[in-house]
Length: 253
Picture (spheres, rainbow, N blue to C red):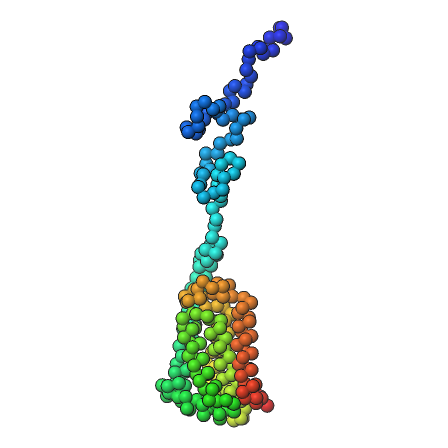
């Protein structure tokens, strides 16, 4: 065999003549050379140019679709919460209606309530200073907190205000039981209701109002954390401060 038979002919163009890729863009002039592996970039037919994208080296580049993290979290939370939001709505409405009812008793004397005059006399009897102003603040604040809890609006603030009122009222009951020498039976003579109400309001602060309310899109509704602890401390501290600065008596001594 002659070794020269393996040599290519002088006019042979090489294997690169078979590597041309047919033109996929019909708008490209026929005079231009079709896309080749060595000369032009590989076409990407799956990229859809968009007028709103900044052009890159090879024309408009496709941007990845953004996934709404907030919407995804809300969807996952909704799937996992089950009936939790319904339970929180029931708890909020129950506590709010109780606060509104007791506030209306103090303001208008409805349902056997004392009215503003009777409530002011009770505050004086319990040893509170500035009873004239405290009467309106306590009664009006109780109604406002109840309405906000029912609506699920500014829930941590409303619940903190309600907690301050309930803590002060609980201290009044403790002092009254002390004066009547029945402090040892405080938890068995009907005061369990007040303790449960305090715990219910504290639970609303820590758990959040749920999705069935006007606070549904706020952070304290979806993931209450630091702000809830702050509202809880604020409510308890305000209740104790009202007793200390406006009454001053030691409820246990």
